[in-house]
Length: 315
Image 1 (cartoon, helix red, strand yellow):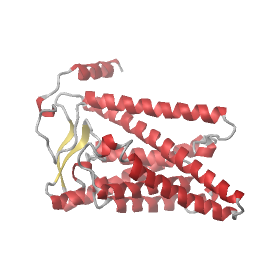
Image 2 (cartoon, helix red, strand yellow; image 1 turned 45 degrees about the vertical axis):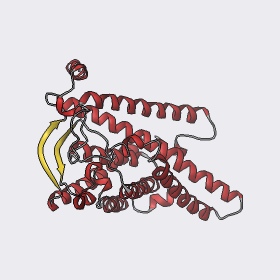
Image 3 (tube, helix red, strand yellow; image 1 turned 180 degrees about the vertical axis):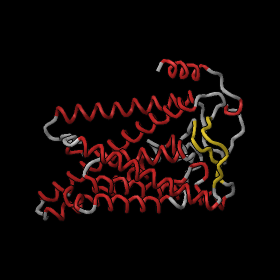
Image 4 (cartoon, helix red, strand yellow; image 1 turned 135 degrees about the vertical axis):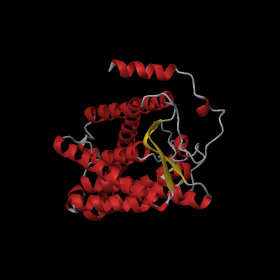
């Protein structure tokens, strides 16, 4: 542990390499790579945000009689079930991304140029990979708790309660609330958060497009489907993490333009506008044509595992 810490400090203090300084020419078809020290700062910020979200959630749920952890899909009445949901979500997310990668590779849209490489020569792959894991654990936790727990689940409860109070049939109210909350939350993410809260990662790369926003919208709808199918957000957290870590740091594909410091497979997408609309360019597969199909495939896997009984129980 001391060796890892010392290596991290050494990486932070090290002078920037010429090929990755801001003054270097832009490499439009290489991955959006950054130094390990830069990724450590990014991961620390995301970790702080995730811990803040969890702490605020704990304070609200433990002090308010109006909402509990179970109400927002974070219940731990069955830790084994939560662990199973996390594991299955991770497997489904990683399988979906691997399918995209295999098709892109076979079609010649991408090319593997090296293995277990770091953005800056001389950095330790294992250390960089550890911080990339912490980055995406934090991203998955923060976004799933905020978007799925507080926005979607409570949105469903609020709409359903309002409709029932006005005399609507309970099942009708629940179904309408699910549809309305799904569309509203997904639309809010793609039309608001992508332009404001997520602008740093989705638009400052200069690679985002209308196709990427459509794909992100479909992906968010799938994220709410995870909650409905499993009855909690643990499945979504596992899926979100598996999707991101496999896409970015195992298979070497850019994750919505988010910078990375290392990858097991270092990949270059094939240049040219005609190919960029297929593989997503520097933005990654979430801007490509295969992403919606991968989301659909993941939905099928989840339905095969959970069936439709969980949806009825959740409603």
